[in-house]
Length: 272
Image (cartoon, rainbow, N blue to C red; front, side, top):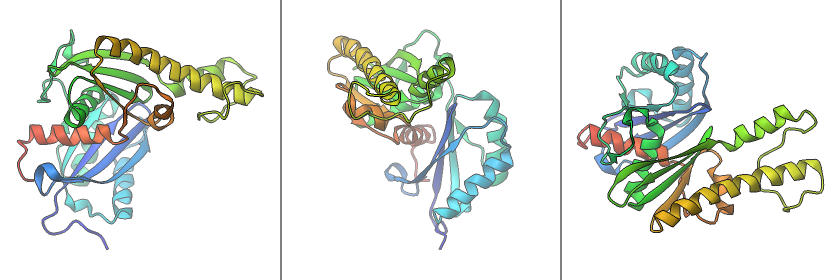
């Protein structure tokens, strides 16, 4: 039986990355207490039409026994500008909504202390907002996406900036493409440090090499900000976090939670 009738009011939160689109549905009928009901991950495609995104979303909602008519609000962060008009049409045609876009100047509760705030990726701001809401400041948020970003918030609530490195999948893909005799492998923690065959050697090199990159950066950041909480999110966060010396918290839904918080801040936090 589909749910969503009556007084239920749902917020659809959408984070558009270069590799994946992550969507989550929150029940905001009761304001700030609305929890995440369901979340999904789709492949990002610049060729997909508004109708294709719309039908995919309707199917996911139906599978979760949620009525599309219960989606009363939408908030979107995106780092893929060519998809913006497609997503605008998707929201308008399938949900009769104008989404709230996470853009420069949006109320976040953080002071943006970087040189050009217009350059700040929406996903980075969203992660920082959610991390501070849950763990306080100072904070270091690590997002394992297409790129891996390290974002830093001071004890005074200033978004100071961060570091951006190639993501683990990008690094692995470069190895596969440039070394024709090396096979594609699953990115996972290996059974042993020293590989006894080519696949094991590649798994160990990619995994521990990337853990070394992550912990090397975090060690330097924490030397300057030793009280900072370190929170990880993103698709490969679950792979790297257990092997890291410095990541304290893993929050797979950090970005979606940040979108919910920003929607509340910019809609007055009133009962939906």
